[in-house]
Amino acid sequence: METLESLRRKLDGATDLKSVVSTMKAMAASNIHQYEMAVSALTDYHRTLNLGIIAYFKQAKNETMTIEEAQQGNKEKIIYAIVFGSDQGLVAQFNDSLAEFVSHSLQSLPGTKEVWAVGERVKLLLSDVGVTITRSFHVPNSVHAITHLVAEILMECLERNIDESQFYIFHNRPKERRGYDQVMQKFLPLDKKWMDSLKSAPWPTKKIPQVAGSMRSTLKALVSEYLFLALFKACAESLASENASRLDAMQRAEKNIEELLNDLGYEFHRLRQSSIDEELFDVVSGFETMKKHKNL
Image (tube, rainbow, N blue to C red):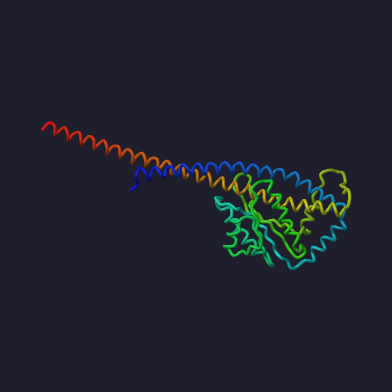
């Protein structure tokens, strides 16, 4: 049976837990804003990069064909999957749904698979479903830390034989209103389909685009920025989704704690009132007994 002291301890514990949850809720809301701002800021830059690559294709058709033919000769591929998850918990199904999506998606891709996991939580879940992790990275804790992670992943990619490899990015992308979706995006190589999509894109003005400087160095710089941007955006979207999921989890936890506090408070006051009633009854009974003895 519950006592006043045990109920008081539970009330104190629930109150402290509510304070922690409220702090985590505020931090998640703050983090969502910075990552959403980062994704929004990348939109214009992504458009500018695409226009630069389109300008190159329009001026260097012969070189483009050479690249396309080289890509078409590739047959045997090693599949590299770069998975952006989380290091921390309290994110509901954020990692679970992503791990399941990655596992099913890789089954449809032919060839040897290597998975690079960004985040300890998703790494463990992928291992549980039978996916072998060959490389792992820590999740950045701010927008500024994303740059270092992306540079590290790009260096790892360039150390592989691109002609014999295919790189895919897996991550959670926020929905417009609420929640997130799992996304699979081909990262490397930049194949004919990718080139055709850019070549068919309309130029925004009537002026013919021109590339200033060396064609090769221009293409190298544009592609390098394009790859960097793709990884940066995927990581920022993943972090925005992670914090949105954590915010939802904290809101549900906060609601449950408030309900628990109400129940414990009601039980505490009921038991306290019952204890007071018993004491009053004892006092009255004692008074009545003393009064009877006095009359005798």
